[in-house]
Length: 422
Image 1 (tube, rainbow, N blue to C red):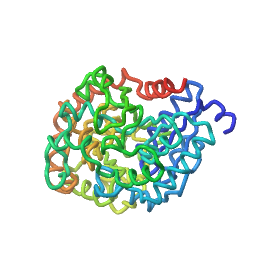
Image 2 (tube, helix red, strand yellow; image 1 turned 45 degrees about the vertical axis):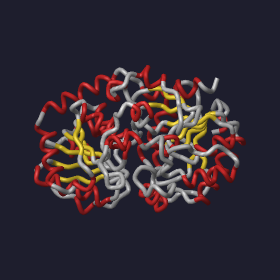
Image 3 (cartoon, rainbow, N blue to C red; image 1 turned 135 degrees about the vertical axis):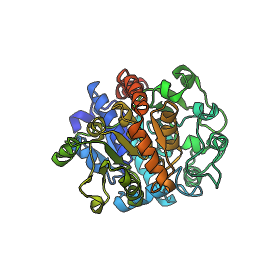
Image 4 (cartoon, rainbow, N blue to C red; image 1 turned 120 degrees about the vertical axis):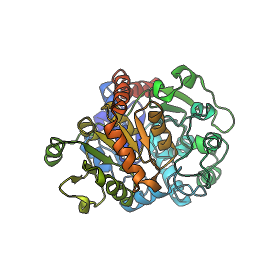
């Protein structure tokens, strides 16, 4: 490890291991940096998906109080965009501990660039240590999209209202989830977080989608400059899709299931309560399709029957090309993995960024969505049937696959990270 770290170029990757998607994107960036002769440091709070780092052969350091599976589950319930807006997902004591520990780690190891996978404490620790912050988790949820009215009405109402106008208006104008961060910032004498949007943006934010899907040219996105509600240093660069190629084999029983007759529906809603997955599977039963469930860390064995196989964490990039429909929560990793395989998608978005991810694909004819409250209803059954039987959805997904094939998102991300470390 020491010999590799000597070539780290001052880069530290910080995945939030409560998220499989966020952890896997950091793995992709780590791999791309490695191809450029750079082995960055990796540091994390720990969490549910540390195993993904180990499977990839990545050594990492733990910083601050270790997050166990129970704390990660609570973080997912309270995360910005889906938890109560008056809190910050971390307690003040946690924020203080993580920020101080990260800043000390950056100083001790000569870190000049921190790349975060939703470890939001880095918005403060990088300021405290004078380190450049790169964010890879926003996908298309970035200011040029708000300012052009590209965000849809949210699947889950905001204060009881489903309004696209409100969804596009509020990110830079309110400080939802920022209270704890700003209390600790004042305590430490560093700049605070000026808005909800600023909470998820770095000095450099990687826009990890192709412009054709975003509906806004790359040049316009990259020409954007921050005004009120943003940190002055914020810049955007379009790098293209960034999704998992988990270095784990396809289990024998899963491969055999996928070799069987279709149609096959893949249910992979990884950062969700098990009740939502159960509701989705229940709504799929009338279709007589065969169902593969990525149960990840949940105990869903009772769902298994002669047409349903329940597995654990799966390499979705190996599964998606072999199924007829993917049903996911709409995070950038799962939607991009489906599109990279040319597989139509039914999204069950749990928060605002996921609403946007799925809607962008719906606008191109490759996806549909249902609100979580409709997951167990005939609406999901009807939409899944439509996606399975109308070939136009697959043709649209194949068109996006061709766009992805022409873009090396991890390489572009690595190049942008390195551009600021010279």
